[in-house]
Image 1: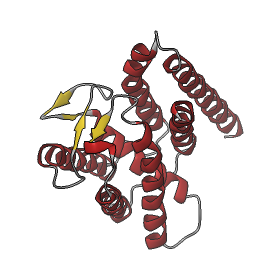
Image 2: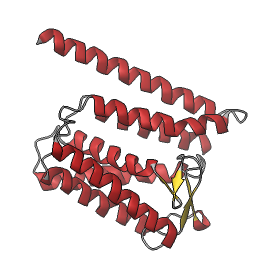
Image 3: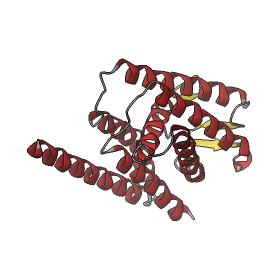
Length: 218
């Protein structure tokens, strides 16, 4: 058991180091005008790699509840994004660029995966604390809004999405919070365990990546 624990720790540290290097290289590449577009095109690949790495460290991937929750979050979030970008009625008036890869009905498929990953990772962070379930759900949802505040400021630079008039409406953050609250409630209702040795580090790497980009463009 001790040998296995040591092995898992080593794999965790190696994986975290790998993603730190990946994100650092992308920041450096984006900072060079001649290579900016190339490295922006790599962001969807790294996001997918991050999601796959998190799944590999998930303890109950074969659980029916886990599959149900992941699929539900993916489908509902993508549906909401698809309706939102085509109607301007949910988040506000915005359009997607090409920075998040392939789009269907004007919304990138990766956005659904991103919602799953953000919900899972923020839940994983809060699951480390002995807090009432409702408090965990609220705080995890707040973490996602904080993440989004930074992301919204770098999204146009990374060709992810663009807001009309370059102004992010308050309704975007309000909807983000309530969607996150609903999805976190689903995670707790279906008793999906999000204890994951890698998830908190991955989401922190992503957050710091966007902060670095924000500091760069400022």
